[in-house]
Image (cartoon, rainbow, N blue to C red; front, side, top):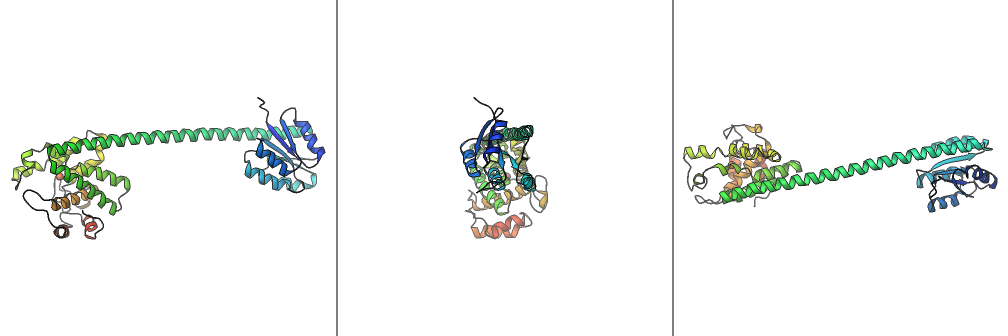
Length: 340
Ligand SMILES: [Fe+2]
């Protein structure tokens, strides 16, 4: 295979066209064209590394042709041939992307020198482009790998969350169904409050395991059909801490910890386990707190009927600012999310 660089000489006059060809033919693959249109057609059909072209040609002049070549083949270098009278035009042509120009009558060594320099520039550009392409390829490969790793982590995350949810279900079916509904309501609340998409998903997952600590509470207390004694209530209040102990050994579940830990904190600071007040409690936990209460009120329990929607709204309104974050409650009172 011939690896010589391809040069195209475009000139309507035979003498300069041939003399340039003769100078270059031993070093390069040289073809010739008698005008810009013919040259452009040849470039369309076969690869050209560098064009040597006269500035003054009938039909399409060298400057117009130069712009045309640069727009169609930006990597191809162009050297212009000019008579001394058109020197200014040739200098201007550099602005349009010409590599250099040769003044007629030209010296054989000058022609070889300028053409070789033009080709060197083209090779350097091609090399840079190649390097850039390799880097871009590498970047998109890495991006793909990061995407795969992220999706594996998500699968792992969802699998773990599901395993925990099923563990709750095995122990207490009510808590399981309740947690699923709390998860849906929490995501809707977060969405309506303008929480970023990624955080909504975190809140949704955290809400579905917010009561995971109940695994560690005696079944007789969990399923008791009546008012809890003080001791039993003290026992129940341990579930946030138990939940935190369960999930803190799983690094990618750490986002769920604030919800598990603080979903019983009240807005007025009278909640548990730490008595946090107002915005001391993370937003995610304040959201799940409201969703938890809403679903509890709307569910029928062995010891009481479900509250009507009207009654739920009344409770929320009355307890906004004391038990509940008023901003979260407003989302429901203003009808921004469906509750069924
Ligand atoms: Fe709880």
